[in-house]
Length: 392
Ligand code: ADP
Image (tube, rainbow, N blue to C red; front, side, top):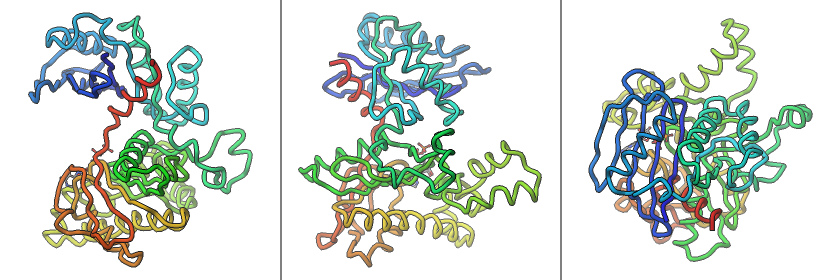
């Protein structure tokens, strides 16, 4: 059976076609600059990457071009070969605690939740509507980044703010990257060969979050109402004193859009390093003795360690700490700097094992009280798995 996993952005469409249940990727790709001049797409098939220009005037057109590619590459004979399409949805609010088949009610709820994810949910709705047009016989599913976090208890998802902000405006912690935290924690349990585990999953990419997972259920996560909270990220500030916002707005006359832009796009590693949001550039800077990069990395690591320590205490111990996403999988330096700070808890790094990129591996020493692993994430596969479960 063939299942398509898609992630629609406002001007992009990322896709992966799976043969299920074998979990074999048949073809994958990315369509970019949809609705703009000079739109193009890249596809990856049989290890080969091909880039093509095409007039992708909207998401429907992008799906049509995708179908042509699938046919011309002989991965499908007809549209009906694709039984289901799983859509990544950033915000599911408190409506969705698991993946669901999309009907009119689900679609209108995703639309309604756009207020909480203004950049992402409207794009996903566009993608769903386009998929519906182009694949009238396929079952469409929604896989939410927030669903895995719906098991977080009240004391962890509420903010100590006026209570009606929660009841009237739904202000609470929703978290993000849930699909990745779920994938990584499931894989970790497979490796440990048990499900009664306490895990700390660190999804550290350009966006970054840490979750505490007990017996396969998320009990806390570092992102909040929006993905701005928690860790220091590439360009997001993470946790700050909330009063900074009105203070700076008064001082500079910034409006809400400008301040939102500042805390999401001009902060984080970029702001402190005064150089780049990309951890590779920060690592180069550190090698060249750049003081700002050294400081940025120190702050970045400190915050990760703060959350690991917090969740270690909150769960009353921990069986494994998992590192995933761009930095978690690839930056040996960041993993080393983090684990060094955890020595006080009896957690120790195996330096040789850590010297690797993007491979599933145990990186802690034999005598480490908590095992540390690199677990490459695969959100697209998680979407395909959930979709398969739903249509069974
Ligand atoms: P997102 O999905 O949030 O855009 P990713 O998970 O792709 O982010 O992670 C992007 C981050 O991963 C960037 O900061 C990049 O520098 C970092 N990264 C990727 N490869 C490496 C590497 N080899 N060494 C260090 N950092 C890396």
